[in-house]
Length: 292
Image (tube, rainbow, N blue to C red; front, side, top):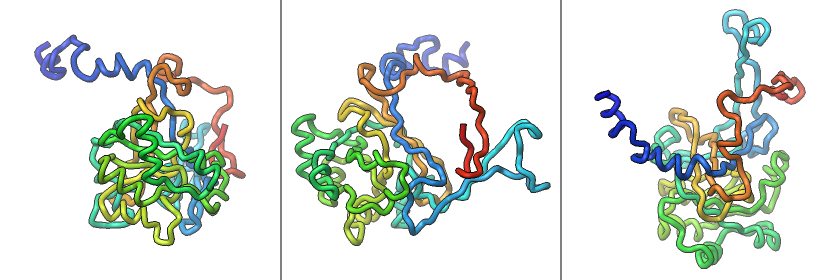
């Protein structure tokens, strides 16, 4: 009992510590995935080329592992780039003096989520880039952007996902350098995110260049921003810890207030055990991946 009390700080008192935060706020929240599924057919910059999935092989025999013969299957992935799908770009993507994906601090895990919509501006100008005036207009309605928050820029560009043609569609909405400088230098946000696969349409990608060469990260290829509130939510941030990685296949999940209209709730979601499907997962050679 002494060990248990020491390990928890105060045995048997769930009112103390972060368990109380979970019980009172997170357990009843609604969860919205902001992440695209990675498949061999998703949009990707032509300079990286395509990726492929395969079935893992027994190195001794060269035979594919099989549910019937081996009791399990596993996958192998030939990914052309770490800049694929929904991403988190560490500054080492452009500048080797700054951290790679595995060097980002664990404090990135959970942050306040701000969503700034430029949907109306994009409807008039498909190439609209977030401007300081857009940020200030948002603050006039919602208050000052919290320091340390993650700011996602909603444009609805991702509505056409996973059409591969998105990777070459121009113009596309972006985030202007002046807005980035305002967000980082004056509001001191953690990072921003956007739906397209590039920050801006300038010849030198000036916004992304400024971010990376000043030690900032950014999220790209974000989805479902129309399903989360502009204020009041949190974002959970996950990515693989690839040694020396210059990009990250990221998972962003918005944690929205219990009264929000969208998202899954823990109480309503089968989790442990997970539900069994009457459509078994199987390899589809035409799609080059497992499907149901």
